[in-house]
Each structure stands twice: as structure tokens, then as C-alpha cells.
Image 1 (cartoon, one colour):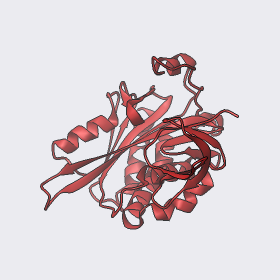
Image 2 (image 1 turned 180 degrees about the vertical axis):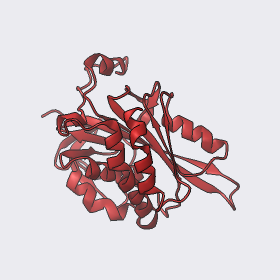
Image 3 (image 1 turned 120 degrees about the vertical axis):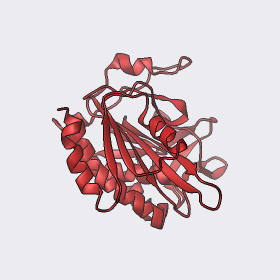
Image 4 (image 1 turned 90 degrees about the horizontal axis):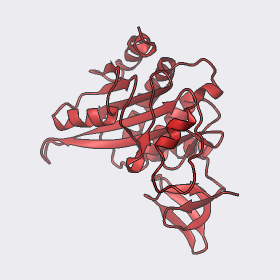
Length: 266
């Protein structure tokens, strides 16, 4: 029995009392857990499910970036559940807060959707939604995809995912084993899933406002010099109650909602 399969029953038992109809599936290999759950949603399957893959062959990150995943070396899963918040703003940040709090005190959050450990990428989050039904009866399903490095990925695998036009080599990512020696992917799944479900339910009822202070405690960018994808430079000043990044620039405070952010080297 694989490590992940060994923990499926306990994960299910910890969640199903708060999420009736919840199921857990483990697949040996798949292109992308997010892609699979989105395919199911388009086919009308809207029940809450946790889909975990031993290995992903075409994992996806934000803006179409790839995500390296090898059996036993990383944890890749997607959680789908019906959700109806009044405002969807800041959902990926709320997910990040939940994961960071469950993983380790040293895990930080890089806006908008990266988990950082010692200023290196530990994991990523991809949030997608699907609709079912007409406007009167439409149900919305959120699919939260998560990838977390357990072991530190090999340099060759990281380089293979770099953009062809990249001018510098990507920084070597972090692995959770650096701070939690011996923790397995299955144990990590058991560690993060119950809290993630509870926090998604809290987001549905309270929005991102309930997570602002928790995010501030994990914010890796506050006070740092940052550069946006359009070339704008400034100092990160946290986020507002909708989860938008606040950047103090030469032209004043800017509210950033959908720009790629990189930390400018000191």
C-alpha cells in the first residue's frame, strides 16, 4: 500500500462530518488533478471530492506555468466543493493562509499564490471555478489545486520547467523535508486537509476579511522592494480586505489585483 493510500481513510473520517457526501480518491498518475475535476464539473459532477495523485504529468500553475511532480517527492491534490461566497476576492490567499498555518511556522506566503520557505518556493496554489445549471439554479464549484514539495526537487527537473525565453535560471525551490524531516506526502495531506475544508467554509461565510490578519503574519513581501510584471517598482505594503496587493510607488499607493510580482534583488 502506498503512503497516500495509507492515510486516505483518516483524511475522509476527519472531513466527512463537516462535509456530507465528501469522498477521497488517490490515482497513481494523471495529467492534472485540477484538469480532471474541471472535466468532471463540466460533465455535471458537483459533489465535494479530494483528488490526490501520486504523480502529475502535466500539472498546472498560475498563468499556465508547469508544476514538477514525482511520486513520493511531492504532494499534489485538488479539492472540489460547492461554494457560494458573497465575494470571491482573496480566495487563493485564504487557501495559502490555511496551508501555511497547517504546515510549519517558517512557511510564508508570497502574493498571490505561492508558499515560501526560507525565501524559496515550497508550493503553489491554483484556484478555478465551474458552473452547473441555468442562471436560476446555477451551482458554482470551486476547485483548489495544491502542489507542495516534500523533497527538494532536482535541479534538472526545475530547469526543464523554465520558460524558453527566461534570462536567468529559476531559483532552486525548497522542500518541506528541510524543516520537517521524515514527513511523508500522506502525512502532509492528513495535516492540511481538515483545516483547509474548514477555512474554505469560513471564507464562504466571512470572505477574505476573516483572513487579513492571519495573512499579514505570513506575508513574505511586506516591506520588500518588488517589481511588477509591467516594470513598476515599489515597496510592498501588505494587502487590503479584498486581498489586493498594496504597493507604494513613486506615483503613490497602487492596488494590484492581477499582476505577476517578483521581489527585486537587493
